[in-house]
Length: 288
Image (cartoon, rainbow, N blue to C red; front, side):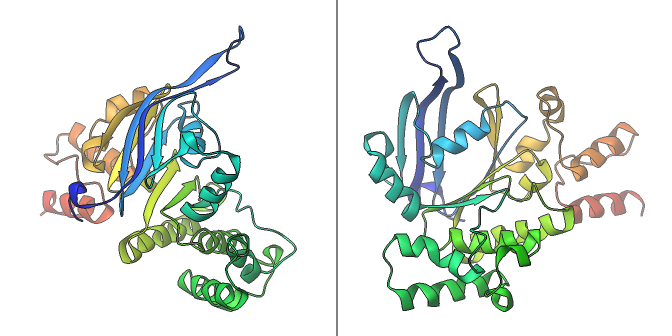
């Protein structure tokens, strides 16, 4: 991957604070000064326990809510200066949303669901149909494009949702707990699609999750706690801080946990072998 200096800055958050019930005795500050930059082509995972502020941050990044303080540039656009109509246009053109609950329109086909954002963007009919078909093929759903959502499995619905998110060539894919309603096997398949899009299409992906296993292949892991970013680094750097993560209610990936257990048992193993393949190789070397 190119150095950040050579890439376009897509998300630029500085001093972001978010307060609810402002001016009342119930006022609460959920985000307490977030600085975060995400560059074109990055795959960034934002992780945190319940109540850490990650969902509120997701709403700010997705232009679904406004910050109480701070500045936010999305692909060069000053979000603070945009009115509601401009924000609607920004959400349609610059952000591809993927939600845990899919948010597909039940009464229309998968193809029409993928076309819908392009309809709002006034893309001509033939062009949007052709692109929708291409996107459904990209996520392996070309044989189910005429089916309505209630005729699809959870994993198939999420594939359609990813295709829909890509419809208007967004600057970022913003995925909020996209595997939360899926079994582990299907969840891994969905994560593979995100990584494929990032790797082969150069799509910038921001993943919001509390599953640390889903963050292990990201370029960066952002850890939130109590409305602040408390860690920001490559997965190998973050996951070796096992005690600190556990203290804020997060568990390291299974592979890292296993390596820590082996080390405590007296084996000389590194704790930064975060993938299954690396973990297996380390263990094999200790038994040969």
